[in-house]
Structures are given as structure tokens and as C-alpha cells.
Length: 190
Image 1 (spheres, rainbow, N blue to C red):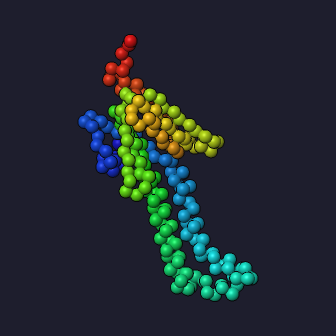
Image 2: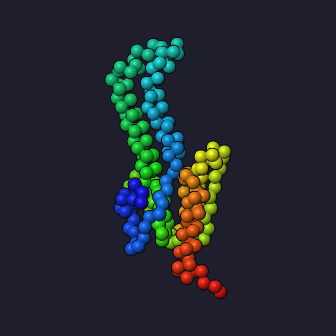
Image 3: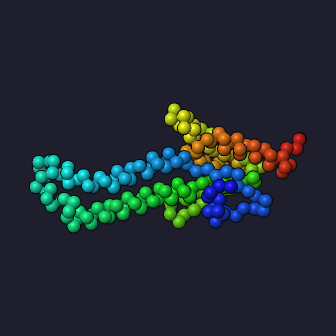
């Protein structure tokens, strides 16, 4: 069982006899690439007075726009608050958007916005097709790709982008779906 399994118990209830096989989130490298601009944006306003002083036409404003003025400190504090909130939102989406494969179903938990959560699931015996896509040389080397599961249910398709080892997860789903359809009577002949 994974480190995050106790948190997932709050998101959806496991059926009797159901156990979590694997949890999947976006690859940590994609998360790091998403968060990387925020420290740069946090430092950027500190360079504005330097650029103002370097431009001859604006050099007169350099003394009033320095980092030691109270107006700059106020604006910079608001700027850091916006940057921190946006970076925290990116982390929240990374942490709360998860796919869970159990021995009975696939559960997709998504949080597109704060306080707006969607939990969808499909029984393994309703899985019709599982597709993986790995695009680009870097993603091929790192084993990062996309996974789509087509079902016969109300939700036509589940998508998870940026997974580590999508082929491994696809094989797990197909193996479990084949075993589930045989036990549910899906393996019976015509």
C-alpha cells in the first residue's frame, strides 16, 4: 500500500474486499517544470530598479522606485503573495489529481480549481480499451507518457497525462480487467 493511501480513503470509499494496487500522479519532473517559473518571478521585481537606473531617460525615477521605498515594499509583498498562492495552487493540483487502480475499478480524482473536486470511477469489467502515448525523445528516455482508458460507462474516457511508466500501468489495468471480466462472466462464449 502506498504512502498516500490514508488520504485517498477520504476521497472515495473502498468496497468490501477492494484494495489499492497502484496510485499514479504526474511525474515529479513535470511538476518541477510547472513550479520552476515561480522563484524566478519572485525575484524579478527586485531587478526593476536596476533596469530603471540603466535607462538614461528613466534614471531620474531610480531614487523613487528603489527597493528601500515603502511603496515598493508594499507592491513587492502583494506580488509575493500572488506568486506564493499560484505556486501553492500548482502543488495542490499535482497532489490531489490522482489515478487509483484497485482490484475492482479505476478511480480518477481531479481538482481543477480550489474546492471543486470530481471523483469518477469505472469498473474494470467495463474497460474496453487502454491506450498509451509517449511523445518526444526526452519523454521516451524518462518513460513519461499519457494514458487513456475507454470504458462502456457514462464517462467515455479517462485521461491521465504525464505519468511515469504508462505502459506498466496499462499492462496492470489490462491484466486486472481481463481477470475481472472472467470472474464477472465476461469470458463466457457465444
